[in-house]
Length: 68
Ligand SMILES: [Zn+2]
Image (cartoon, rainbow, N blue to C red; front, top):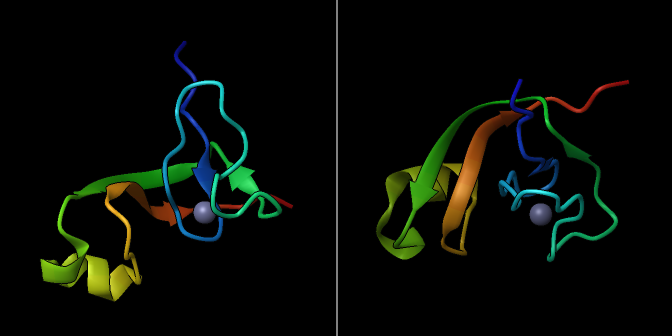
């Protein structure tokens, strides 16, 4: 069974395999329990990026569930 990579609970950035800390939010919780994702290439031109408050290109989860 393949385990999901972690996503940052703060900015929802999906982290690389084996990475359990967001480079921009080292103190934020991460979770491998997330749903859907979107690839943002041009945040300044993307409506989705504006809605998700994303200003750095990357792959982002649409929803991150931080467990108890
Ligand atoms: Zn983050």
